Image (cartoon, rainbow, N blue to C red):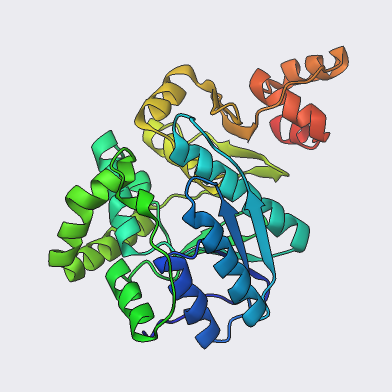
Length: 327
């Protein structure tokens, strides 16, 4: 399998590993290209087999002299398991990236994943940004996410491993249709991809080009730490695109209901994490904070018309330069 990994231009890389088909194939493809990386794996303790998967990850790390990071958690009888598991996984990755100065997180998302996501978002009601959320590179504040397998199908990856007689594990929960992604995989995406693979790949490429052609300036007029201030473009569609892009970088994808509510309310907190406020002149986006502020600071915010749901973050982080912009 001949893949171009030239977009990995960093030395400190972390591979999200699971011992399944996708991440195992990517592990060995990276080895072939002599790309430096370490691995991180999360054990959710949902299956007996997960212990063997972690042991296999340790074996590979030892054999090929890679650092390995393991997170052990238990998620029993919780609603929305997939979302909770994803949040735990990416919080773990970001902690490792911060503590160990990794520059790139490499994930094994492939073409099947991309199509599954497209169909799931389409079923919910979504715009272009949500439908085509899987880019090969996503730039975060202090690192980037790289997905080099997005043009490769799962079958191709499995054939690569079988040909080289490389061990991998099949997660039996991937066949459980109580998880929405599995339902779409079994009933729609796999069959569709088997018949129309080349056309699907071309369509994704055309859609990506269309998005880039329609892209708007997403550079904030002010940015400090996790506070971003954009100019109000006086167009609901353009404004919500700015919000979409900012939140996507923060790991949050808005639903249609959330998008509509932001435009309706103008001031909103998303997922108890991110504060958004649209004023006549600016769009403010920051982490959601609650804290006690002194009277002088609150009065200064009032005079400068700093939105109430943004003030606590500015106060906590002592971001005083923003007042110069507003005034």
